[in-house]
Image 1 (cartoon, one colour):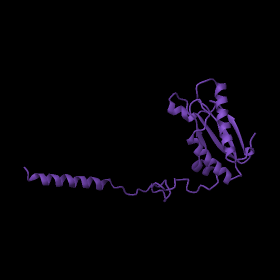
Image 2 (cartoon, helix red, strand yellow; image 1 turned 180 degrees about the vertical axis):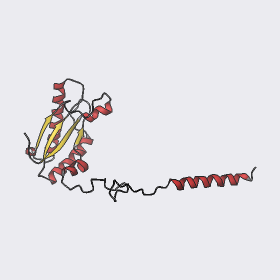
Image 3 (cartoon, one colour; image 1 turned 120 degrees about the vertical axis):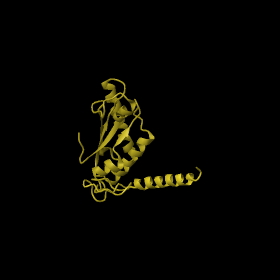
Image 4 (tube, helix red, strand yellow; image 1 turned 90 degrees about the vertical axis):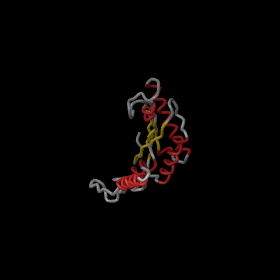
Length: 175
């Protein structure tokens, strides 16, 4: 019986090697993707390889236009500050853009309270951008309350998506 042990171990090892070898991937061609979309970590995303620096797409993809808030709060936290600092850098580098700052809320309370909270969030974002050197004449803010929620839900992880400010780029100032 002991004579079969080395054979059994060799068989198990051979099977394991065969299994590992069969798991190695080969590049599959996908006719719907451009030739450079090989699926590597740093490959450009299909359709976004030609994003022009300073464009609205550049702002959305590389800077970030959304900042999120804690329940019932208009305080800008450290995570939001990173996004807003990136917005300041972008708006400073590309002064042709105006910023429409829209606040939203999905917190406990009536409609009037949500409009006030969302306006406070938008104003705080605008004040932060102005403190970073962005001319106030290039920005305007408005709170929408629950008017334009992303998702209608009761779970905390879902509601937090609605507690946001979005900075949208515009070619000219809107009133």
